[in-house]
Picture (cartoon, rainbow, N blue to C red):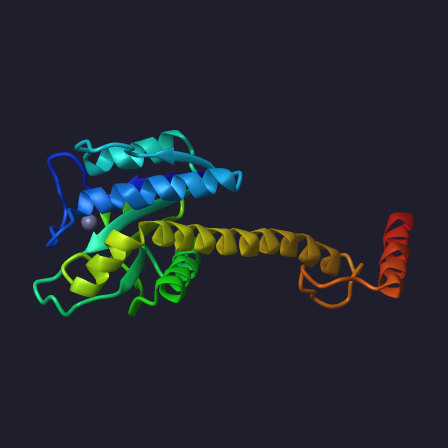
Length: 221
Ligand SMILES: [Zn+2]
């Protein structure tokens, strides 16, 4: 499992500017902490940048595509001319995609951990979402232009990273289950199991015996 982390902006491009923070710095801060947590959880990470350098959008996609990363996570902070605007939103390229599922989990994890306003999962034709080969999301962690949100970003960057990591891990455990579901569908097609089953549910001895006998019958044919 290889995850590409993309800290938005950098170098000559500060991104959004808050009263105390530059977006490029908080993006990098959260991204480096996210890398640390994911590596501890035995997930390989590649960074599009790990220091304050200018990086165009295509090279960011190239780094992820060339390394054949499984998922792409772009980290940003939001801004708006009205300083009342606040909260978290996560973008996927299209609805009902794998990226959409990943975005759902990450959005939920951030909002429930940080108590930020839930602005929901959104869809956008952003460059890094379009030109990456793998499922990709772009997280707008919080509003740098809002006093409460900026304070959260200043005081709790570790918690943002932990929440994002938890969202990713929740998503991965569910897609693993989906992978096992393909095996269950195959067994059902062969008549070895009768009903569709949740991959996480335990099997009774009677059911196991029945399954083994049906397997033997399939082999006899
Ligand atoms: Zn940004």
